[in-house]
Length: 180
Image 1 (spheres, rainbow, N blue to C red):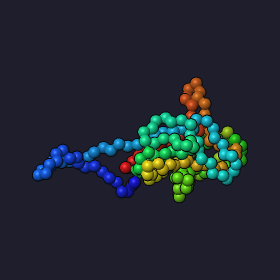
Image 2: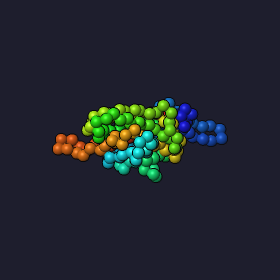
Image 3: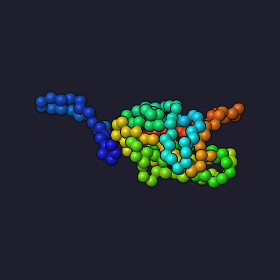
Image 4: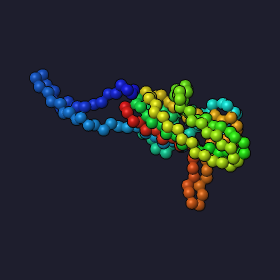
């Protein structure tokens, strides 16, 4: 796990009791793991001021990263430092000010300083919210994307396709390994 990283720099070509040969390769591109997952339907909070995990329902692409059980968990099969980039689409359904909070949780524990906050005040107002963080994981660790609202007239909204644009998921998360 980062920052303690193992990097192969050579391979043994010949071994004997009296001699050996090593092929040194100072630049070796490592296998990187990745995944992109979406929530394609609306998700509402069950109540106010309560943490809710986003439940993902689609895998767009993945290699070494997967949706776990429950489907709110994004699981790493391999250790490394990962970049998590989340895009939320939030909808206000009333004309009063309401707040949304969006953050990361690792193995059931909130990640410090990972919250992004949004305030919407208009009825029918949409806003995208983005949250990005680097998270160090070992094999089988999981990350959850969390949200909470102080008014249930604020929710994660998926938009249907139109004649001129494709559908938009309520939430999309892209995970990229940046270091083994």
